[in-house]
Image 1: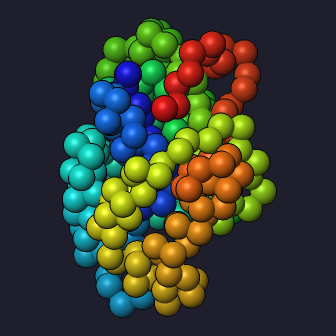
Image 2 (image 1 turned 90 degrees about the horizontal axis):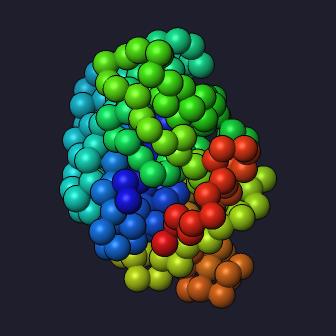
Length: 233
């Protein structure tokens, strides 16, 4: 299968679903990771342009750990809007990756880049199948099912799907630690230890499904998006 994960910022995917992506890779899936914003505002003393370059490199290093393809950084942080320009970028992303299913943010997450990413992916994954909506790539042949990953801190999020990531928690940690700029930023700005934060949420979801560590997802359940096949590993 082909799996596309779309986050708002370079580290969002690692924090919320990297264990699942690593597990998908092990079963033979092709993995595509994308972040729509370039991460240029998640720092204190580093100029935005320099920070964006740093975060691009961090994202590339993370993707290499599981052999995923990586693309993104289309918009500055907090300048991602649900408009035609953004939508076309995401449509081309989906047409390029041709995913069997997509993982992205919940529409109920805590900040605008996350919620706008969710809305764009929902809209674009349908529009991407319309041949008469012309962009730089041919239309995708499948309206892909969409799975929402955790809200930040698991707040207001009730999973409908769980993935046991016990054997992949180390990989998830390595991928997350590639984003050293954000480790420091979140420690200062939000007073959280990145890795401890991730493991606490993964452990909590594990408790819910009788696993040591797990990741939770909620499927976008509307007509045309529900598959009888088990898509998550």
